[in-house]
Length: 190
Image (cartoon, rainbow, N blue to C red):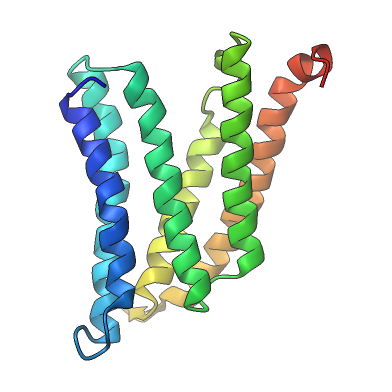
């Protein structure tokens, strides 16, 4: 495992997951609900920023590595899955929406792994549609974590709407990646 700044930032994102989850397990006497929401949102936003930052620094510092390319999406998926599970537990997100998003992530990860084994990983590389989906997810999750009104905006209502849109984009992008992989799927004997 190459030790470089981008990989360390990715590991930081993974280490933030238990911090994020622990916030909601603190008693209300230890941390008032409003501050739990605020702290969890801050940790999640920090993780989202590190997602952008590690990729930027890897390119800027010419510290791209196969391990970093593997670890970065794993860290993203773990953080998103943890946040969605917490949101479902809190009653702020629909379990079926969480299942769609997490299920898509597992499916596409498996598809990319399979395509990489065939030497075709470029054909299912991250697309602009995937980036838009991720942006909707991150904004929706942040709003649902915050949960309260902010400057007169109902974060729960807007977050729920954006999460449904993210789920639709999730299905659309999954279909897109499956379509790209279809020639290889047809060739295989599965």
